[in-house]
Length: 235
Image (cartoon, rainbow, N blue to C red; front, side, top):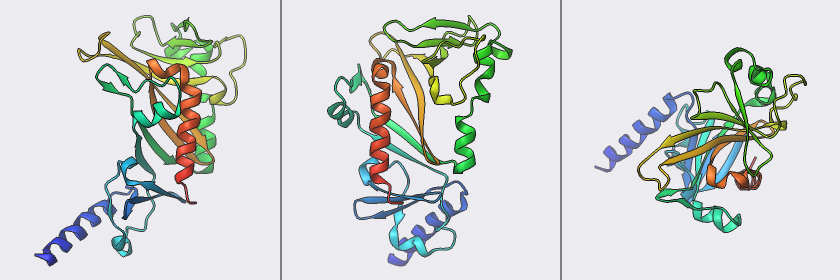
């Protein structure tokens, strides 16, 4: 029976290795070791959302290949303790922060920050020729809808996209996030809006979502997430 269990573990590990994009997640005690590109993270097990294998299986062929991304989660209660005013729940929905970390490489990071993908939005051309720009009440931000009938999704900007002015060269100079509103009977107002946002640290891309009720804290949440991730990075 013991031999069978070991064989099953090895087969499972080889299946992980067969996936070229799989992140190597090794478990050592209560710590998960994540290898993403040239980086290594030692993450407490409760924050990792990656399937793990025992550390002693690292020697198997193919399992020393670095993955391209990893998934983590920080519980809402921890966030609310560290960030004053952060709401841990929206009725029955928990405000945990789900995080994806990717290794873009030097060229990939520069390309991500480049604003070419938002030129149509800024200059009101192409798919954004009929765009609608609205100020956000209580914030110095703007919602940009692709067209009048698409009010369920928008880009959130911290600068007005004035076509008469050049688009800023760095995405993070004006972009906050990509937002989506959905409806659910589980929510007291009947709908839920959240925005996908990101940060780049070196060649690492850190992506996560913030709900509309916590969006006013976006800068503090972003700094908090980056700080937590870097605290787990070994190299």
